[in-house]
Amino acid sequence: MLKVKKIINDAPSSNMYVLFEEGQNNAFLIDVSDVKVLFNELPKDLNIRGLFLTHTHFDHIAGINELVLRFPSCSIYTSKYGEEALYDDRKNFSFYYEHSTIYEGQNVILLSSGDEVQLFSDVMLYVIETPGHCPSCLTYYTDNYIFTGDSYIPDAKVVTKLPYGDKVKAEISMEHILCLAENRIVYAGHDVDKWKSLL
Image (cartoon, rainbow, N blue to C red; front, side, top):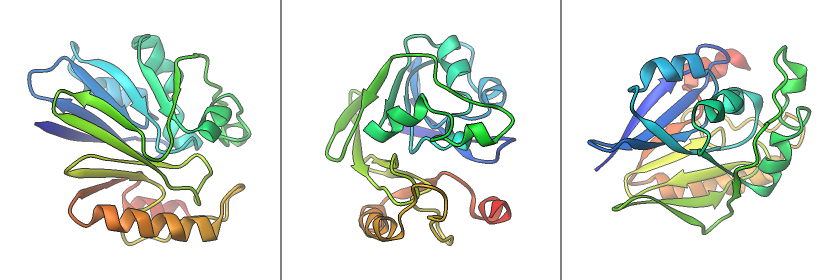
């Protein structure tokens, strides 16, 4: 049975999620920022096989190089625009922070709406493109969970005022997400109280 462990980054404040099954050495990650917090939370024998990015804003990718340094075979899943932003610190906004992040690896796998990724023998991860907050936004879901990044944070408005944001696309994406979220547990990119404090 799939289990989800939520890890809150210290700075910048955002959420990471570890997807795993009891008794399995392999796991998958949704977004990565503060790897010090992540590595402290992970069992030492756990292997991160893949990183699924909900989008490529700095606060969701900041620890990507350190992650791949520790787990060299880890695949990075993102959209076509997401791939561009991984290698461009202006598109991922890290240029405007004190810690510029440009991905140093090559193991990127592109995803788009309708794609499916087998995580475990009985767990499939489904993909839908949900642009608006950012062109790179992807939402992932399983039978029981949905990972929405910043495309949907319960009780918060979707931010579209950043460069490349699109209010119309965000509204369309929200409609799709709300339909999928009806019978699933929602795991968003931020907790609403911390998210509002950032705005």
